[in-house]
Image (cartoon, helix red, strand yellow):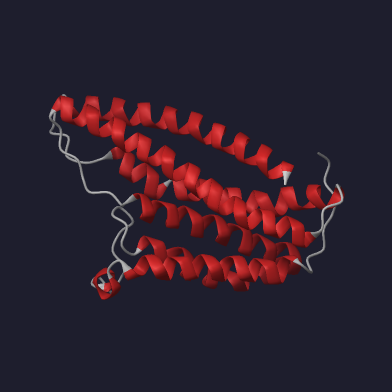
Length: 219
C-alpha cells in the first residue's frame, strides 16, 4: 500500500535524525563523565531499550488513529489496511533494529578507541522482536480505545503483559519483580514467546479494527 511506503520512509528518516542527535548527546555525556570518572556503561543501550520502544509504540498508535481513517477515506477497506499494517510492523521494526545496531557499532568503535568499558546489550533478534511487539501493541490498544472509548482501558493490562515479554531477557529493561530468575526459565525460548505476543496483538487488532468506526481525517 502506497501510504505505508511513504509512512515508512518518513518515520524511518525522522527516527534516524532523532537517533543521530541522541547518539551524539550520549557521546558528549560520556566524554564529560570521562573527565572525572571511569565510563563503564553503554548510554546507547539505555536509550534503545528505555526510549526507542516508546517511540515505536507511538508509531503503532499513529498508524491506527491517524493513518487508518485516511486510508479508508481514500477507498481502502479495513481489511486491506490491516494486511498492510501487519507488514508495516515487521518492516519498521527491522529498520529500527538496523538503526540501533549501527549505533552500537559506532559506539563500540569509540569506546574501544577511548578504552572505555561498556555493558551488555541485546541481540539484533531481541531488538527486532521488542520493536515488533511494541508497535503491534500500540495498534491493538489504540484500536480498542477508538472503538470502545474509555472502555479501551480494559485492554491496558493485556497490552502491558504483551510488551513485557520481549523485555524479559533484554539487558537494560530491569529485573521482573519477584521473578528475577524468569529469564532463565526459557532462555532463547522467550523469542518464540515474543513472536506469539506479536501474533496475539496483531490478531486482536484485526478483530477490533475490522468493525471499528472510522471518521475521515484530512490528508
